[in-house]
Image (cartoon, rainbow, N blue to C red):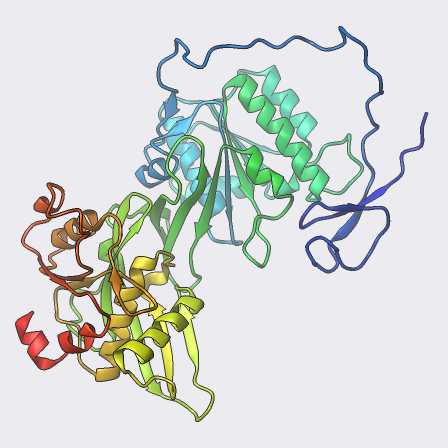
Amino acid sequence: MARTDPRFVCQSCGATRPRWAGKCDACGTWNSIVEEIPREAAPKGLGKGKGREIAFVNLAGEHGEVARHVSGIAELDRVVGGGLVTGSSVLLAGDPGIGKSTLLLQAAGALAANGLRAAYISGEEGIEQIRLRAARLGIGDAPVLFAAATSVRDILTSLESAEAPDIIVIDSIQTMYLDTLDSAPGTVSQVRGAAQELIRHAKRSGSVLLLVGHVTKEGQIAGPRVLEHMVDAVLYFEGERGHQFRIVRAVKNRFGPTDEIGVFEMTGAGLAEVPNPSTLFLNPERGPVSGAAVFAGIEGTRPVLVEIQALVAPGPPGSPRRTVVGWDSGRLAMVLAVLEARAGLSLGASDVFLNVAGGLRIGEPAADLAVAAAIVSSYSNRPVPEGTVVFGEIGLSGEVRPVAQSAARLKEAAKLGFNHAIVPPRSPNGGKNAAEAGVGDISRQEIKRVGELLDLLSPAGESGA
């Protein structure tokens, strides 16, 4: 028998090398290379007839829509595209203690209450610990099958010997191991091999596989990057320790839209759904204050209104601070440069602090105009007119560019009682279409240049609004 030489694998990127090193040459990560012993290679020179013929089918099949299991948790069903597809695999990742296990335990309980067979397998907690959490969540009587195991061989044997569950929860994939691999659980080979075996079982049995994934300190899913390619959907559980809000964001979904979000509130009895998150991110009773602007954004297919706060204060000479929470710091630097060069604001000697209220993180360029409005409002100490929403993209020449789905943004603002909007000009090829005709009694203040914000935030601009 040929000798099997060990290999050294980077746990961050999966790159292999013949000997150990302190730093990975491929990704630059330190102390991430671990020795792994590969499985015995398959014999070479396989002749004809050794394999099994596969069956090819036409693209147009005779089956109808793919069956989905609706959990009854509307925010989770929204993120996965309307329900969990049979035979699919979903990876849920997030920071420690963010609520991943709580969410999947609640989902398993809700699905079991609807008549489905749900199995919850934990590699991190014992049965009594899971029962305590289930009792706290109010689902202690739900017909969910629990088990504490880490061996993939034992798990698959148990699942195949009994009636196949409709829902299988694995908490977490980094604790699972294959006894055919001589590496520790959580390594690249173990995570990849365990996930492959579990996904193969889910495809063959038609079960929905829900995997919990750990993340690194940089926020990336721990283990090989190929894990995200193997599963059908990747969900990130986001949230700040200081806020009770939790956001489930789809970054990959083969059966639904990506960048869709579901909003939850962490309570003593578990995660509660937030059907209208705009009401949580706003503070309508505070009244108008300088340095705040309400941004009408789009998260996936859902319009969300969120408050953007800015503070412009005198800073130490030569080293002004730029602090950002919930937005891209590079984009803030661009907006500040445009305000100085195109609108004449002198911000080079001032500290600028920017915060997205509620712990939400915004990534779309449509927030440029709202950020600029909050900065100008703080700089001039004049509030944005009450009942006003702002959205638009800012170019380097100071122009305000149109953004997508403006009708949905305005409709959400009108539903929450806003009556005025500072927006970019309409596209040259589109007038007031049928979609924008149903936004309600909300007036539009179209601006073409970012310098016009200075005129709008003057006393005359306030009275005119």
